[in-house]
Length: 493
Image (cartoon, rainbow, N blue to C red; front, side, top):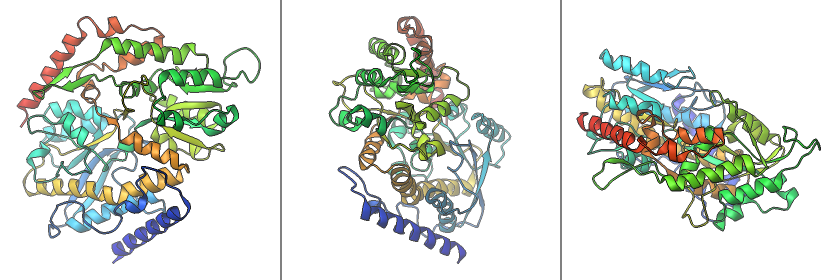
């Protein structure tokens, strides 16, 4: 009875919020409204309604990194925040449907490899202490090749063909009927870790410059246009003739994490599948060199960009966000999770969001990169027997209930209405997530010696060395390593 009351309260809250939004908001064109989301009791998955277990615990090992993934698997209690309460009630719903008890085993260490190390030790020992892993994508991929996890395609559940699982990720990571990890709406980080451009409307208004929505719609939102804007927006506010922190900038960024999204936004694939399904190196070094030139100009030569070059554990993202939220820059590159942070939420000046700029006006569409630490779910190889079916069913129902309960709370209520109030920004979010790019070269970066990081190095050095860094023996070495990856996947059960 207590669980039922909690659920009724959640749905009442969602209904009231959605009704309020519908009454006061012009959603604009192309928007999927919150009232169109399935927040009723209709079952989205194909797990039988009468499938019940015996109240067993399902232990999910995860990395609960503060400000990143702290609430993806579980939250301790209801607190009247829509996302928190949706996650809490999702887990209650899963437990009630299947008669299981979801137990969260979070690791709060900032080292994202700690959960992988712990679950590898458990599998080697034949331990069944953990039933599922929610781990960072790029740390999980090398462990898959060691045989740490089970092939999800051989299980009755999860059903990876369902829309709440990310199909592009499935296509990229599956091989010959095998797939060892999956992601989608079950992981909030697949939203939070998408790179976007944020812009300060007040700064644009003062300059009389149209909001970036117009450039996106006209297909003129390019690196060249961003550089011209950055140059135009710069003002030496203290009149000392120096570029310092007291000036107004067109762009604040860094030559580290904020460089990564250009791989996808400028349509530069690293690794793709060939006609036979094998992973091959496809990098176009000539185009990459052109992109590097444009980014170097934007960062160093246009005269309107402020760079943070001291980087440690992604703390430069906090510094960049602080500069943007203080109103000292027109634009910035950040992951969408920045919109949840107090300094951005409490900005005095309204901001907008658009996808990352593309390479040229001739490029078709805007590409979105998710930071390679987005969460994927796996089942350890030590799982067996009837409990294996149960674990798979829990994973499936968690995903479907995330689509039904968590996605509306996060994407439609918190992200769109609570963190921003501009219907045009909502359309830009939809555009951003309609064009997420999943590149095997980034997923398997740990087994390929991190080739995408070389882009960061060049930008940090202010030196286009594409020919030397990506030429020579590198393509041959990468393809050799890709062949090893395919060989290991082929040998896995």
